[in-house]
Image 1 (cartoon, rainbow, N blue to C red):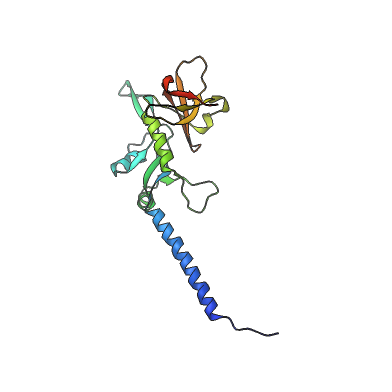
Image 2: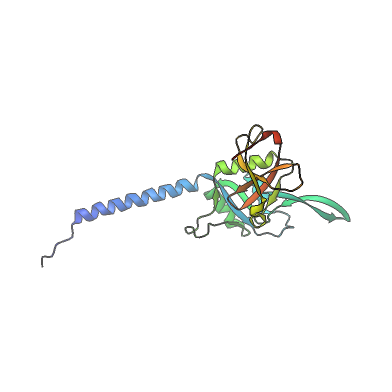
Amino acid sequence: MISRKPDKQLDKQLEKQLDKQLDKQLEKKLEKELEKQWFVMRDLKRSNAKQPAYKLLEEKQIEVFTPMKWRLVVKQGKKVREEIPFIQDLLFVYDTRKNLDVIVEETPTLQYRYFRGGGYCEPMVVNAAEMQRFMDAVHSAETPCYYSPEEITPKMYGHKVRIIGGPLNGYEGSLLATRGSKIKRLLIGLQQMLFVSIEINPEYIELLR
């Protein structure tokens, strides 16, 4: 049996290839950390906290989207309406991973949400275009009505429609199936994490087959 000496030149070539691959991976990681994205986050503070996460981030001039709802509370013996998060521990934050990592480290009650079965420390993000469309829909409505995924049932999905005209021109989705109501509401989902229904002018609705 003939023994061969290791090919040093081949080993060096393989080493260079591995170094290049590692450099590319590191470069991509750094680019991703410096890219602004819509991160899905959670706020672990109590519902009556004076400075919830969305207010903290707004004070830092960071764009935040938090679905809100109204509730009646008693203050100094009087009933007043106040706006609170629809889902206490859900907020969407637009910033770089690098900047948010610093804030998360300083704020134990602010955390990233992670993909189930995803890679190690891979936080959930929402595509920028999808997030913008969802926010546009919410901001176009006077009375957006939010739903958690658990509240949505197959029976709630009505006709498939396309919106023609108005701020949601071109948007396709399903009408909210409601009995005995003349008001048409469009049901919109955001990555199965959050749903909202908004009132739509019937003149803008085109039924799809």
